[in-house]
Structure formats: structure tokens, C-alpha cells
Length: 125
Image 1: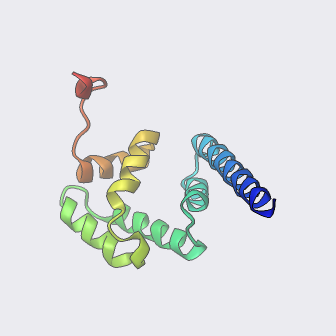
Image 2: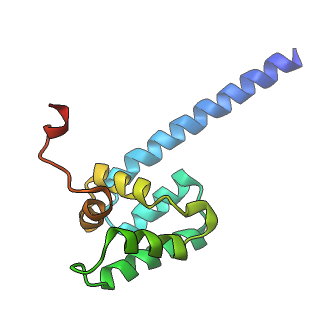
């Protein structure tokens, strides 16, 4: 009987966590300031406050660079150099998420790293 109760408890926790993840995802779409976006992203991705600050500092650095000379390789290399081990190599995934969310301040970087996105529906043909 203990095993059954423990299994039920585990399933309840999984269901609650899935619900909370969905609540946080829906909040992400309503929060406009980038700092709020980072906070929600941090909760969803289990990031520490220091990691969120590092990500914020990276985007501030990127915004100060000359966009005409910034390359995909330079951006990826700079990201990986500034991030802790668990975030290295995740720039593409972060930019894919920003592109899905249509976060305006990141669309240029998404186009640079992921390639230009065609007109809506072009990929479905």
C-alpha cells in the first residue's frame, strides 16, 4: 500500500509541476519588459539569479556591438565564453524561443544565428 501511495504522490507532483510550467509559459507572453521575460525564463529553465544576470549582460554587450560587423560565429563564441558550462551551446535554442515569441529586440540576432525566416507559411510548402 505504501508503494501505491508513493506512486500516486509522484504523479500528483508531476501533474502540479506540468500545470505550473504552463502557467509560467502563459505569463511569459504577457510580460513585456525583458527583465520579466528573463525571470520567467529562469524559473522555467531552472536558472540561478547569477545566470540570469550573465544572460542579461551578454545581451547588453551584443546590443553595444556594431550590427553590421557582428557575425554568427562571433556571437556564438562570445555567448559560450561568457556563460557557465550548463548554458554553453544553448544560444540557438534561446533564439528559437525568442523567435517563436516574436520578441522584437532579439529577432535580429535570431536571423543572424538561425538564418532569415521566410514569409509565413513558406516552410509548409
